[in-house]
Length: 450
Image (cartoon, rainbow, N blue to C red; front, side, top):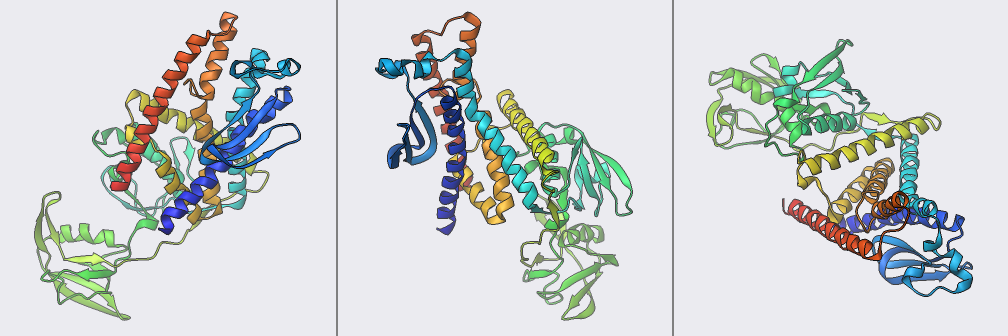
């Protein structure tokens, strides 16, 4: 249950920070233009805490922490005293109304830049972008064990997170991409990943990287035996805790290397070298053929890997306070471009609707990033803040982008839209949001079941 409560807690913290900044953007610009703000609320529903400021604004923390709002004086929503008429939102020029509505998403973009700056200064621990195992498309491209991925396409990859994201994005588009590497001999090389050859039915939820055939160095399991299957070729010959160092004279750096070496040997008698209790032993055994519905026929020793602790980080994404400023701006631009491109893929059908996540997934990601440390949590908050900004500027009635669309139409035609047209738009917007939220909840529940 600690994971559940942790997820709920960090989701509340995350949404609280993001919504407060978003609504403060509306609030601050409205106040600069002289608009009277009646209520500044973080959350919806019954107020849990309320305070009235000297300016008459009610500051509220409400029970449902899934959003917030700034309520301004508006003649369309009730009677307004004559003395306050010019302070009503609807009396403002269309330019001022656009500025007030746009201020919320802009505040989230600025928050994203600030959070990324703090993350870069603090330093985000990560793994080096070093290839541990290569097969399939990766092997065909010429990527080898020990190669350090320095860039994918035109994007630098200082850590494995950047490399994995760049490759996964290109894989989703089935787009061939050049991968720049530094080999173990310290030479620069370029390999072309033929991602256009990935089958169309590959699961996008992590399946893209597996289809490429790349395993990072930090995910390789040591070649230590954790369990031996009774009656298998290794039974009575090898022992739990043995570290396999060589098979038929070929070294075994990781557990992933055992399978290919055994397939190469086939069913003949082979020498397996192990390290046991500090001693080196050479033992003979013959792999046995098996049949699996998915893998087909293959040769096996009958050994399984030993559980291993989480690998230690061996890289850090960090800049000084000055250098972190352009880095944060560049990262914000990159994240924004990727997010907008993903929306385009969803609308065009090039990405599965399973990529749409809801509050349950957000809560789980918030909890997971918080456990990874402050820098990872700042990175998560920055991405969420930018996502909130992008979603809010979509031209959907009810959202900020829908209101901006109304005001742009008003600028073009010289007069506001009719109340009837705006009401119809609100209903359409509510329907779209309800459908989107339903899809998000469905994906969340399906992911939990999986």
